[in-house]
Structure formats: C-alpha cells, structure tokens
Amino acid sequence: MASTAQMKSLLNSHYVGDDEHFNTVALQIATSEAQQGHQKLYLDFFELNR
Image 1: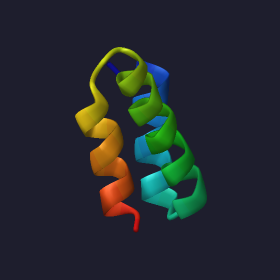
Image 2 (image 1 turned 120 degrees about the vertical axis):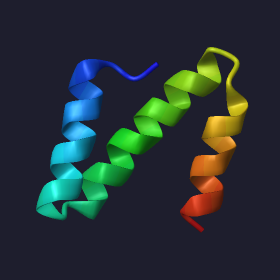
Image 3 (image 1 turned 135 degrees about the vertical axis):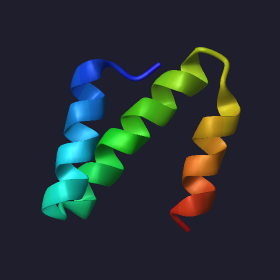
Image 4 (image 1 turned 30 degrees about the vertical axis):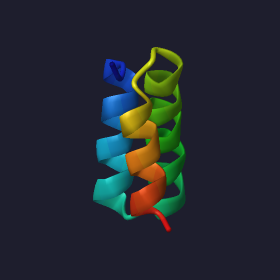
C-alpha cells in the first residue's frame, strides 16, 4: 500500500499539474505493489501510460 507521503505527493503533483512527478510517484507505488506480489497494478500503470 502507498505511504501517506506518497499519496500526498501524488495528489499535490496532480493539483499543480506536474505530470512528470505524478508519473514518477505512481510508478514508485506500482513497483512497490509488484514487489509485494500485486503485479496487476504494475501492469495497469503501464497500460494507462502507453
């Protein structure tokens, strides 16, 4: 699960329109989930960002 800091960072970057930072944080969250055996989120992230 995403940490509170990651969620705040994700929301803030969306709010200010920083797409690069938003994608970086989203990828960090997805990678963390994949390492915990939740590959679907990781794969969904890449499908959305084609």
